[in-house]
Image (cartoon, rainbow, N blue to C red; front, side, top):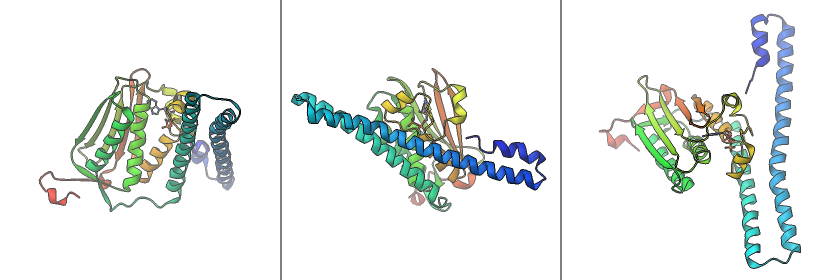
Amino acid sequence: GGRGTLSVLVRPYGEGMKLVLSQDITERERAETMRRDFVANVSHEIRTPLTVLAGFIETLANLPLTEVERKRVLALMSQQTQRMQTLVSDLLTLAQLEGSPRPPSDRWVPVSRLMRTVEGDALTLSQGRHELRFRTEGEAMIAGAEAELLSALGNLVTNAVRYTQEGGCIDVRWTVRPDGSGEFSVKDTGIGIAKEHLPRLTERFYRVDGSRSRETGGTGLGLSIVKHVVQRHGGELDIHSEPGKGSEFRIIFPALRVQRVEPVASSSVP
Ligand code: ADP
């Protein structure tokens, strides 16, 4: 988000106490507004599936349905329930990320293991509807929390599947760069994102197309989870996209968090 709009204004002139104080108050107001917006958003996101569910319960209770109709209503109810489950689970993930200490810098997670897990998930999600490519260029380990790293990568790959039409291509790649840093790239040939949306993309509940996101099971929280995880690992999230062509999301980890694994010394690979 555009944190510090005011501090940008204040810092160049910021000698007086008054300016510092007003910056402080404005930031507190901003935080309060954000909290209120967040609660309003959560309430809205929960109310919608609940309203739908209430309607279906009424239907089941009051209408004489055939067995086929009854099964259909139950399937739709299960879909709405799942939607709320995903929402609650994403909210919990965010809360945990905010409340827990930074991930360890001395626990090493092998990239190959992350890739294998994410590849399995992608195959399940895509159901053969996309061409999937997974490549590891340079075996390495990343210092951090495995569950968090998986959740970040998983969210990017889920989005790639969600926003890419049938027959499209999804390319997931790990590369070690010459300066010792490393990056994951998740690239798709999907619908793409117009430039004006890019700055707000990682905000909670921000969606380019709300109905498409909801229809495909999106909560609008995925990229804010990704951003959190990346920041906690001292990394950077880089987004490039072109409407109608596709998107590329890159997670870049600093050299300190990346350790190359020599292919021969296989005994040191966990
Ligand atoms: P959602 O659960 O809606 O996918 P995210 O936070 O993961 O929420 O993403 C926010 C929005 O960014 C999405 O609603 C979608 O509009 C857009 N988006 C994310 N990833 C992609 C992608 N790979 N291609 C096109 N649009 C994307």
